[in-house]
Length: 456
Ligand SMILES: [Zn+2]
Image (cartoon, rainbow, N blue to C red; front, side, top):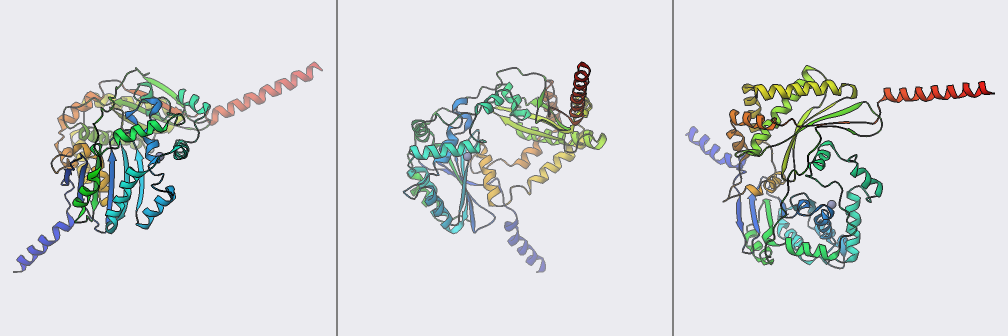
């Protein structure tokens, strides 16, 4: 009897603890809008993400900011009360919203009380559908976008961008390889007609996904059918095809960052060859492995760097994996030599099996506690949209589990088959050099005074 009670208790308790992230209710409305619904952890709150399939990379360099400009314009207001009136309505519903433009998409992000979810979705729909964009709104949004990008784009800034002084090392390399635009696009010349065309062709239900996670309203599916289901679909356009690497880059470069200082940053950057199976999971594990290798080589064994790290990023259609270390400027050469030896060792000997298994285990364990809460779960579905099929998104823990040592080893050999690109960032002068220059200046002055005295 007691056992039975315990069994019943356990049975009652488990659903509260375990939430299967990979299972999600997804369907298409008749107009092509993709809907993803998930009952989340907190029931009195919902996280909403409306993802529009248009981003920076869909435009050539001189017009890249266009989707960002439209994103801002859609907060201009839906009636005479303007943007302030729109914000007031959202506040009255207890919600918060924001939007982000990335290289691949434009996403509206909302957190709101569950009881107001339909009203909040109404407001979002009104902003998308009813915002009147005029010249005045265009001018205001242009100013905001410019400010966000670091102020008015001056001739000096443009010149500095061209000289590669304004970029981080991987950005600089991406520009050199032709993966990234050398300059920011100026928003000044963008017209209402361009903005309208973008809105008409890409802000269509068949180019959007709506994700709602949390305490879902029972009537939500019927509501969505009646409201968002009425948006008119458009003929889907072709998205811009990314070109990949188009230019060769120098193997090693020193980049000047700032005027004065003793610290430097060393970067060794590799292009990720595309893998047939488990591409992301394999490189994620390699990145973690290399992170540890860097840490144990540069910090534990040689005390050269405090926060060395391996990082992955994607630029256009290309993945970059970088080994990065902060070092003193007079230890750059030593760190670079040690890093070169470490890479050579890994190239020759491959991964260490026990270390690989330990790191893989930790990565899998991590998946059990990341993406907790409605908001993180909604972001997770946003990132995994391409992965969704028939009520499931891929489970990252499972993906990681499937990567074998042999597979990871082969990927490592492929990654290190090319020599990679070294970038060293350091300030123009170190203090020693500054003192040297000051002493030289003083000496010259003294010599001039003596010379002047002797002439008299
Ligand atoms: Zn912005």
